[in-house]
Amino acid sequence: MAKGKKSVWKIILIVVVVIGVIGAVGSGGKSDSKGSADAPAQEQKQEQEEPESEPYAITDETLDTSNQFSAYITGTLTNNTDRDLDYIQVEYVLYDADGAQIGTALANTNNLKAGGAWKFEAAAFEDGAEIASFELADVTGF
Image (cartoon, rainbow, N blue to C red; front, side, top):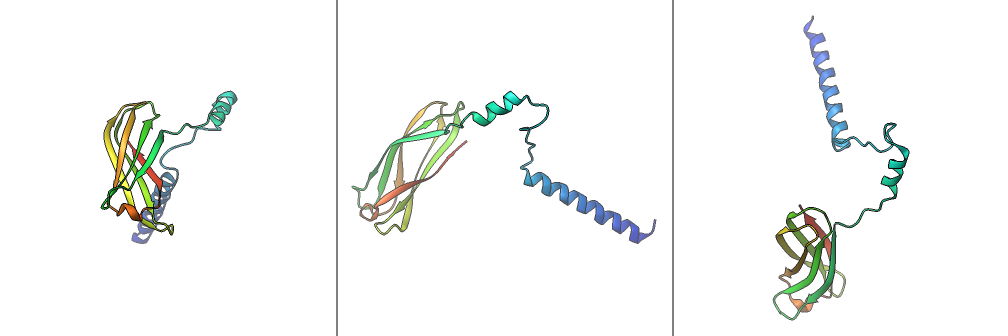
């Protein structure tokens, strides 16, 4: 085979591999079995009707701005999953009276049991007098 023909085949092979990688990445490397001909219709219907419950619930959130050099958001986070978590973190965004973001408050813990409750204290190193409101930004758990 001539050298030019080998180069063309190498390019075609590279293009096919790249397309395969893009396809796998685009689907998250998973195949979706919903709607397949093999699954019974009743099973598919149940999957669609079951609402997903929230993995975590936060209650009793309170902002403590009594300290001049810091503030705390306290509350209780419940692990609604059926698995123990090695690590979990809550993050809040802090706002001033004009609605501008002025900081964040964070808390984390380890080894929260399935169904367990964690009384957290998210610390922020902002002047408590400057904080007018807060908003839950994220809960990270694994």
